[in-house]
Length: 329
Ligand code: SF4
Ligand code: SF4
Image (cartoon, rainbow, N blue to C red; front, side):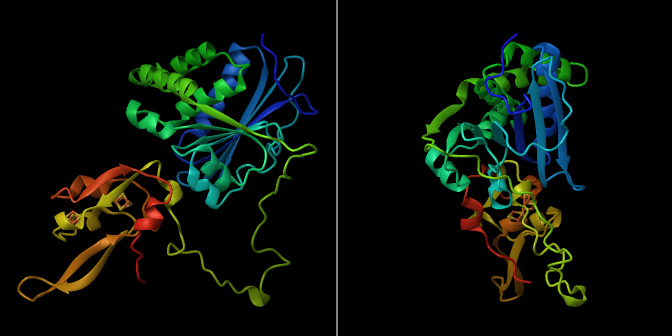
C-alpha cells in the first residue's frame, strides 16, 4: 500500500472540491473516496455541502484519507486542505476558494489560462498551482469536467493508483450508462496526462491563510431597525454566470432578423430589445444583444434561431462581461 505524503495532526490527508452544482463534484468526491477505501486500502470519508437549489449554486465536497489503523471520527467540513480543486472559475467572484490552504498545499484549477493570471485571480501568495483544461477535454470527449479533474487530482496526489480509479469508473457507469465507460476513462487519462504545475516559493515562516467561515449578512447585530430589507431577493440581482458550464451563445447582429424565436425559449429573459422601425416605417422591436448576467448557458436559443445568428462558443474568462448588453428595468 502507498503512503500518504502529508498528514494533519489527526493523521488525515484532506481534499476540498470547490464547485458549482451540476459539474459532478459530488460524484467525483464519492469516486475518489471509494477508490482510496476499496481499492487502495486507506480509510476514507466523503460528504458534500450544497444549498437547496443545487444546480448553479456553490457546492463543496470534502474527502479525507488516512492510514487503515486511524479511525475517522472527524466529520466536519475541511478548513485546512492539502489539496483544493476548483471546478469553475466563476467561483472566484463569490467564494474564497483557497481559504485555509496549507503552505505546501496545491490548488488545481479547471482553466485554459496561464499560471500567473490564475494566481492573481486567486490571490494566492504561496503553494503550488496546477492547471488543467478540464472543460476543453470534457467538450472534446463529450463527458463532464469531473472525470478530467479526477485525473488531474490523481496525478497531484501521487499516492493514488490511476488503475484503481479506472476500475471505479467502470463500476460506476457500466450498469446504467455502459456507453459512458470508455469516454470517461479517456477523459480521466487526459486529465492525468495534461495537468501542468507551477510551484511558487513559500517565504520562510508562512502559515496557512486562516479559513474564514461564511457569515450571514443579516444577523441580530447587523439587522436594520425594524427589520427593513434594502436588497430584496429577486432575480434582477441574480448573477447566473456560475451556472454556465463552459459554453455560451454569441450573437451576430448582421444575420439577425429580430424574429424573437430566441426570446420565446430563453428561460431567463436574456435578450435585450429596443424599439425601432422596419423598412416601411412601422414600429418594430429590434434585437440589441444578450445580457450575459442572466444567461445560464442552456443554449436553447441556438437551437431555434432560423438564421444561425446565434452560435455557441467556449466561454473565456471576461468575455461575458465585455460583451454584455445590460437589460434596462
Ligand atoms: S432567433 Fe436568431 S434571428 Fe431570431 S431574433 Fe433571435 S438571434 Fe435574431
Ligand atoms: S443560452 Fe439559455 S439562458 Fe442563455 S441566452 Fe440562450 S436561452 Fe437564454
